[in-house]
Length: 310
Image (cartoon, rainbow, N blue to C red; front, side, top):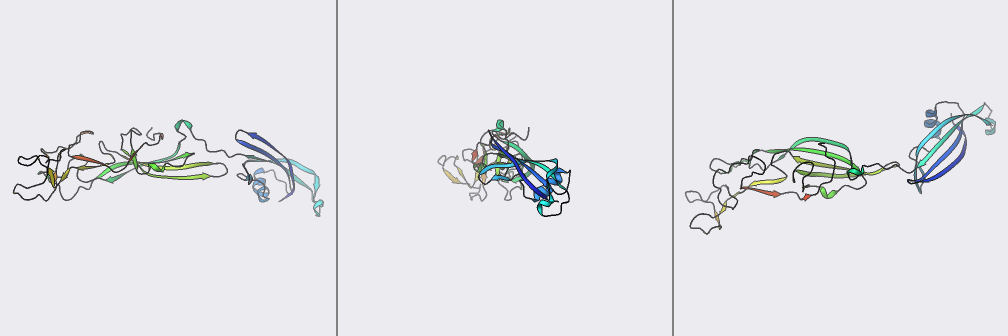
């Protein structure tokens, strides 16, 4: 079956708040009767090169086909095959086809969430290596004499990773890459969340134009650990507090027999030798004085993404 007659019946245009909208009507004659509109549109109509979904009106007009309809309109009484120089075998069968061109429907984003709409979220757990100089409860890796063991503890901190994708009109915020939350975020204290990865993909087709941005956040799931590096203050020298030595001067650690100590020893907050057993922290905010904290990642204000925890 094939289309034998083509009539561009009419075309009308209206201007809307989204842009121009054009309705075009065809009257097409087919040489084999069919009441199946789907078969007609996907067969003779498409094969003949008529407008299909997503096709642009012209190279200079940003409107695209977003609707095509076909309706059987009865037999064509004004035409027979003899006009084509063929033996007449009957009349052609008529289809009325309506094609609508309209501006693309851009992705609708929710304005109450800073134009973000989470459409894909995954959550999983993993571990990250710790310094190894203290265990999960904060006990230093030392013997009963306060000396560090040569082998560090094979410790890992539990981490919860959230991967999410968002649709937005803006490209991804690359400056978030490898930063930690500077303030409370998703219910967690500052420096508990690390933005490990940021990527973006621009989607541009006949019906959609938006950025598909992906972010990966890692949460230290521990009562008092965060993305700072914790180290026990220790070394081969200490600030003098002994009698006969200028207070505060830096001196080498000496054994009882007068020899130099070949292992680092724990120090207190003033850099002096740690007195007592340096009891480990029992709760968040109760750290021993001999811990020091190092910021491995800069702090940033994290986006107002909807909390996946609910």
